[in-house]
Length: 481
Image (cartoon, rainbow, N blue to C red):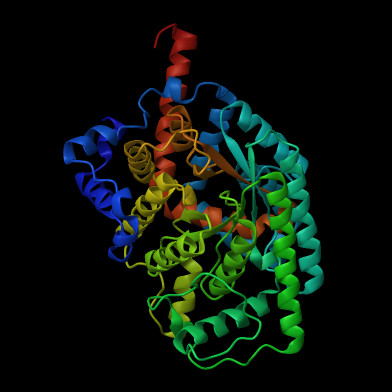
């Protein structure tokens, strides 16, 4: 069966319908609106990506690398084994064991991470760049407990920017986590205050700077059931220091024209993360070149409402908006928190709802890329979403060399989709976390959980890898295809 034929008519019609502007923005869009393609055009255009010819797909990839990748994915698809590994990594005592760290380094760490230092990650970027893709440098630090830790972390992020600046122009972006720049307890308290202000607009927050809208009426406002205490003077000072850290990284990125991607986190702190991100965008995204990119998690029920609001606000401010769209990686944590509080989960009720939300957000933002008012990174491991977005970009006439449209996948995952997008001429980057094993463990746990829960993406890659390895074996040993 041709891979492209797996795209359903339902998905095509959903994506095309989502490309229409929301009702509130139609008047502003005016003649710029692009008609949705006909069903016949959709069926022809969704086959932009080609996966059947694995020889072409994996051109330049050594067989040893393909074998290692297949072995790692096969290992990660063994549910009971993954469960044991996750349990071990979640135990601080076990995770600190030299034996466990050595095992993690030789398996999940080697597959999903680019090394322990920025220089090792930079070498990976250079290899990717020679193969037609870019890299996203992610210094794997998160959840700082105090200001001293935040200061150490910002030094690491600034070093990542300097390393990216020394790489070929356009080859690297930098990813950061606000949870590494501001103490986690302060982010939680600030998020509570932002949620309470959304419910009670008369509440004055003296520390709050000008920003885009942060929450919507569909956001999980129930996470703050009662009025929180105001920030103390010391907390306000620490919040300002966190702003200064973010702006220092943003300014360094702007100096070298390097995109800065701000990761999303879990719902209890996401309002604060969005607040920081939007303040940074207003400071750094002038001149028509977006530097700071926020992240929208499509598995959240309020994702589209918040995206619509931030897009409208950015257009009113005449700021080029930078957005990364992901599905989300904190499903287990969000479900446990909601259950413990006896409240509804902030996550969509079905995986199909999440797919529809992701595709709708992507279609909506592609319109903005065409108009020059947004820069978008579509981070997905879902082949159908990649096919649909590539087809819509082609329909809209977005140039495949346009830096305002990027696709991204994690290192070690969805390599088939990455290579298919690259071969079709699109800008593609791999997300490259790096740092000491003990600092990367939370990331490895999420990747293991995701690979276990989204086996369809892993199965697709394993299918492609097996097909190509068999083809190479026949060609080399038997002298035939």
